[in-house]
Amino acid sequence: MSKKDNNRPIVYSTDPDFRQEEEREQQQTLPAAQQNLYLVLERHGGGKMATVVENFIGSDDDLAKLGKMLKTKCGVGGSVKDGVIIIQGDNRDKILTILQTAGYKAKKKGG
Image (cartoon, rainbow, N blue to C red; front, side, top):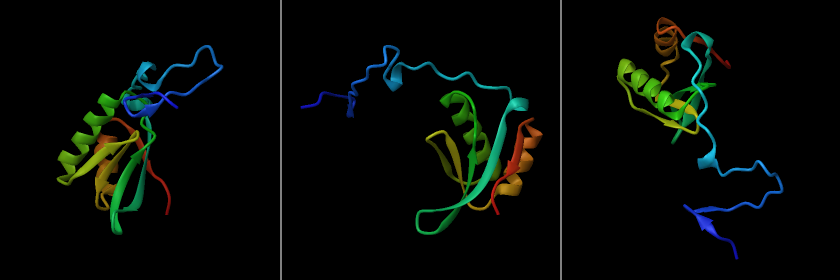
């Protein structure tokens, strides 16, 4: 029988420094000039194209703010999940320009 907390099983660990995910500290957000972001074109949901922004180092709130800014400037929908920003459509060139204008180091990844 396992106990559950917020629908997550509690894990037994022999590590004395083990902490549940919600107890971990938020990661400090690096300044824009120190971020190395990658733009990837992927297929999501029924073969539709999406631009994914990867490798953001920082808090979830700052990632959400960046995602909202990109969605607004591109005029499309998208989401922020699992530490990446997903923007609908092939907007790599537009997002690259927006990120570089905002001071981020960004480049396309893949073919």
